[in-house]
Image (cartoon, helix red, strand yellow):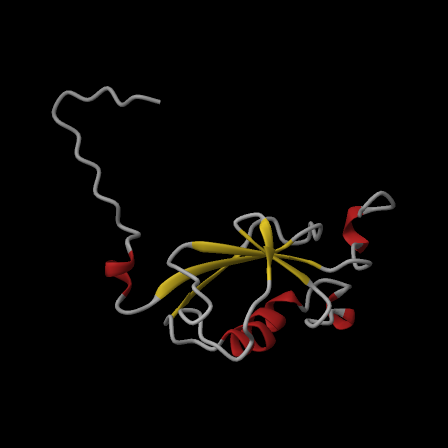
Amino acid sequence: MPVAAIADYVAVPRDRVENFNGKQLLFVSWDRHLLFGAPFLFCVPPTTNLRYLVEGPLTALLQADPDAAALDWNQVQWLREGKPWTPDWNASLAGNGLLHKEQLRFLSHGLNSLCGEGGQ
């Protein structure tokens, strides 16, 4: 939608990576789990180990979901930019090529309790 302004309008994006003091934003969402209405947002250094992020902070945030206890990280299907993606668990975010404001999604086949009977 165009902006109608009485003077020149200069938009200054405030969420550029330069504004995060060496950290970056990473969004992570669990597909077909409607208890979480939006992706989780992490503000972490790009040197953060992916295994640590997933098995530590992400796992802790997911505990409210009834399926969380049965979640097996070795069985989930990861999506990056909507396409299947295989992470390197022992590499950092940067080592996995994950950039500022990128979103990862994951599917846990067979664990879809909050989607009702038709959940895939």
